[in-house]
Image 1 (tube, rainbow, N blue to C red):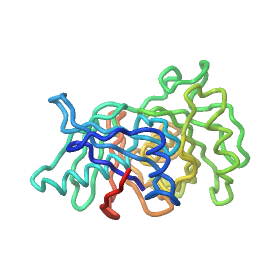
Image 2: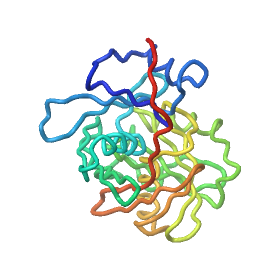
Image 3: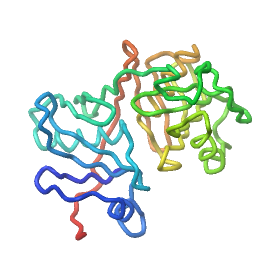
Length: 258
């Protein structure tokens, strides 16, 4: 879930105190990330977004958050069928697909320098040991991920293992962490520890990274369903680009005095 602030009319200052206040589920609305919609002079895009973790640091990409922004903008203008949304990870293309929203998350890579890793290694077998899971698969989809495949994700203690891997010395920019259980060749289950946010119920870029990693390891097909705590996302890898499709719902609109 996301708090989305529309700065197109009033360009309010976004600082750490505001981000922490609004992200906290006791003092604010509560969210996994805070996203701002911004005007831009770039004529090749519709809008620009900035994505902030609850701690105040920025995130380069957020697939589900981008889809939620797209949902708001499509509701504003029902005639639009596609949007170009500029983020720190590049320009993301959002489209209406029936009653759902798809986002092309762009090129995925396992190049160790682009993830980035602290030294050269086999990115399909990152030597981090987690009981019950294979070696990690390091992926970049605008932000860094490491994906672990195992027989079951039911008993994984995310709060214990997540921060250790997020801050592992292999990852100079830290990393998101996904644990995957393969159900069949087109279906996986996922639990995620998000960099800067902790345990979350869903992660769009993580779902893309997981399907890409599973496809590269020949565990699943490149068009697969990712089952998360609160529903599913459908990921399709086309020419090393990840297209993510799923629902987006507006919980509520509101105003807050700051």
